[in-house]
Image 1 (tube, rainbow, N blue to C red):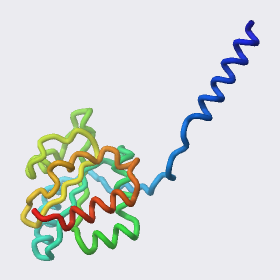
Image 2: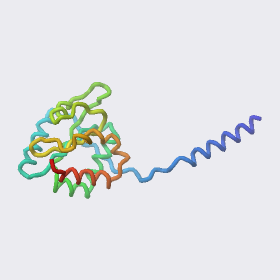
Image 3: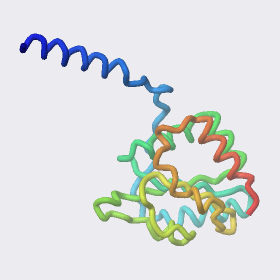
Length: 166
């Protein structure tokens, strides 16, 4: 009886492993640009000033190095394809949001300044005009799945937000 039970459970285990789909794509790039800074608000102000002069948008990426989705998004933004888009359309600022679950929320005031009252996860992407108008109020906090998004999907969304009328 034990042998039959063992054989059945072994067969089920093999079947279960075989039925788990393989990842659709290989993992994307990663980067760790989020650093605790006393000047995060001033960095955003400087990017806004540059954007007013250049006519670009400001891309405020609020994340953390401990977060795999934040690292994945930053990794995509560091690739050649994204660097070209950013050079043409954006001023970028990476803002560390600490560890929200632990109550460590050092830069929540930056999000609130632009109308985002809570950061429910990480990362968050605020796209701003040079005058500080939030272009993406409905999607700013929807990036918690950045690690599972494709580079094409991220690129397309950021390209659209760069030219979206306000």
